[in-house]
Amino acid sequence: MSEAMIPADLPLRNDLIGEVPYGAPQLDVPVCLNVNENPYPPDHAVVHSIVERVKQVAPTLNRYPDREHIELREAFVKYLKEESKADLTVDQVWGANGSNEIMLQLFQAFGGPGRSALGCDPTYSMYPEYARDTFTAWHTAHRNPDFTLDVDRTIADIDALEPSMVLLTSPNNPTGTPLPMQDLKRILDHCQSAQVAGAADGVHPIVVVDEAYIEFRDPGTPSATTLLGAYENLAVSRTMSKAFAFAGARVGYIAASAGIIDCLRIVRMPYHLSAVTQAVALAAFDHTKEQLSQVDHLRHTREETAAWLKEQTYNGKPLQVAPSQSNFLLFGGSFDDRGAIFDQMLQRGVLIRVVGPEGWLRVCMGTDEEMRRFREALVESMRVVE
Ligand code: PMP
Image 1 (cartoon, protein in one colour):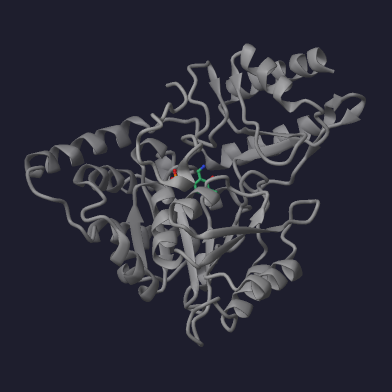
Image 2 (cartoon, rainbow, N blue to C red):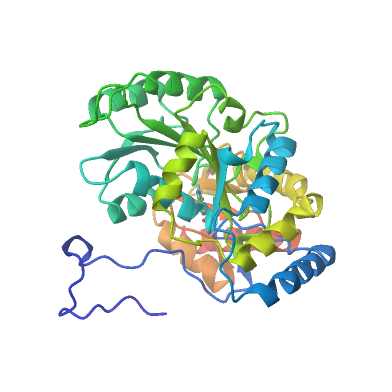
């Protein structure tokens, strides 16, 4: 698809004039390591369950689906109990078409004109888009040079800005950096009494933790969902797109207080989750073990790749690698022309991502064969560009 060509006589919103549709390139190349997917397809048993579940709903497609998607919400509760040891009820979870839609609903409900949201950059590049689309001002607190969160600075920015939403990403994209529980608790505690600009006294910011990649964390590390009982102002967003190997199905979800979920129910489109989406997601949850079966291996691939990258040199200096608890690595740090390396990789059939601070590139973990091709292409590309 070409770039958007918007006719000048269309009444596009003034603030959108000059904007282009956002998204990573979707190119037909042999090795796609650019959008942090799980490279392993669903196995045969899962495909079979999907077909069976869809067969069951097909004759009912003349009717709207369950707007409240109760069966799927029960599956979220069960999964979060198994995966994160979170004790939740159905009214504390909510699904949508990817965690992208969850985030948009959060901005629709809690952002808006006169409101602001605070994130910690470098971070996920879609946040400013949700903010723009909901007329919410977007601000960032800068991370430390090692990409960990600067908690004092974040708290100072919360006080200065008085945002209605604080967005924390753990593990963070594009850096892979986890947010330690003690840091999250400090921010949550602070936000319980912080002011929201323009709001009545006693209205405090919500803290959204985006856990899109959480299943790739070190085993035993807690998820923010375990704090939900203690903090009414906490919302934790999750997705089936990453570790769960289900990006094509478009299912994300959120765990929060029942009050926060009720706010999202106000802004959601009627019947936003199709009956087919609900059926397909339930089929995947019938096979949680199979869907997550490659997570350990991908974690291992990440560690091996990080170690290998650190042994490589560019212009005589070893590559830097940001410590990652995710399925991708931000690496380089000193690429003087990262676009040239990206292009050289692409010429060799390997698609990675130009994202994050200058000098860095991001690669997500593929199959063993894909990673072999990544290594080969990177070594050649760096030699050509140096
Ligand atoms: N949050 C983060 C941090 C992400 O990296 C992504 C996808 N790249 C998303 C949310 C959205 O994922 P999805 O809509 O597929 O759930």
